[in-house]
Length: 296
Image (cartoon, one colour):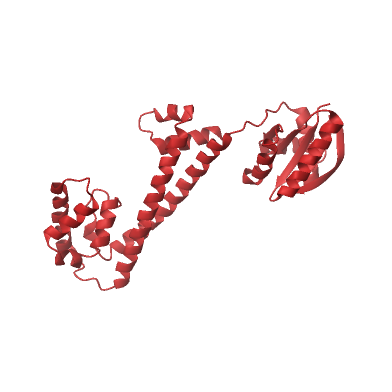
């Protein structure tokens, strides 16, 4: 015998249909919840099939994103052979079937029939490492997207307080630039301080730079303050908002830095990643993203 169990996966539950062999359905279709109790009952059912057929059944299901995750993990850990198919394959099979009405029970039945009709490859376990890499990369993309919006809001406020600040530092969003602006958020603050005070403050924020570079930035900052069209800050709410955006941006930069370090550490152990990264112009983050797109 060649037993198989078809699972029609949906949010929080699965419809189950079993075949002992081709054209030999086993028992009636039923549902199991994606809870520890529900999945344990599914394993008990699979063991019943093993006793009946003398062989551990394969399990076939459609790819459904994260809905399938608890089922796949539970069955993988217990050594069941999983076959996860593209939904387009089952859709075509459904179109050629006499049972064209879509229900969970019929879909689970059709998955079993498909198992005997097609030569389907077993699911290749991607491993915890690869899934961690995918999760971290997606999180990096999410934070980057939110950070872009925060930068736009930050710039809108800066334009109403100290527009001439742009250009003092090569990267407006570098840590030293944001921290300096946090210390001197308006032209008034800079004009009240002398060159020595500003130089010492920037040097404290960026020890890696030479005192000459720091002094040049202090002079540029004073010149920017002198050019600033807003001689006084009328709305203190802008200063408050500016400080809040600076704090948020610094937090985002810290989070992204941690994610990038972890992504690089995980990805270095994957041969394909190192091959992609060897291409000129491709760094760690892009290489990891390209690799994940290739293995999907």
